[in-house]
Amino acid sequence: MSKIRIKGDTSGYVDLETSATGSNLSIGGNTTVTGTAAITGPATISGPSNYEGLVVENTATEFAGAYMKIRDGNSTAGQYTWIGRNSDVTYVQSSNSNMAMQFTNSGIVTKENQPMFDAYLTANVSHPSGTYNLSTGDSWATRSNVGNHFSSGTFTAPVDGKYLFTANITANGSVGAMAYFGCEFQVNGTRRHIHWWGKGGSTASYFAANNSAVIELYANDVVRLASEKAQSATIVGGSGYTSFTGMLIG
Image (cartoon, rainbow, N blue to C red; front, side, top):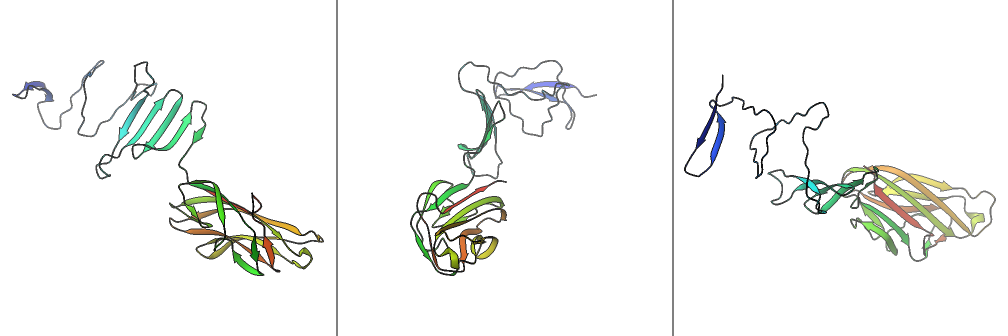
């Protein structure tokens, strides 16, 4: 049977320990620690039937919230992940101050740093017949560009994952001679997810093709928007006539 031994030393501290290495120390009832408690070994916390094994609570009335701090010893010095709650918002922060995720009491989840972009062509482009990349020397602007992963008409994936892309290309030309007009995505120069518009019997001078796709990418893969046409035409720029959007979904 293990015994509890209380010993002190010249440091002024009093230690509570078992008499043998590997023996268990059990403290029944409620235990209150008013200072800082340091646990250097593995810890198992088991709760009663209401599952409250661990409760982290700030009992003060100020708007300070309560949080837990997690750090891997091999990570960059001083970098922590924070899991906390402030008022009606629960949040997870990475690298000290970068908000990774937060959600409200009603279950609304937001990820303010999730990579996404909303771009549009700002000026008309003369498009010859055949395939034309709408990211080479053309003028693009962004309404939003979280993470700045979209640049000069191309999107570079920051991490491995599944991405949702949408696009709309509006053109002006001789529809009567336009046998097909395509809107497509290219990944690292390879054509993907081609959608063609058929002319039908229309003779209108404006026509459009759109596309959407979920594409699995590796980090640093490059995605661009391209078009293929049977006849030369003008790709229409301006506020939203030709647009390209994308976002990381998981």
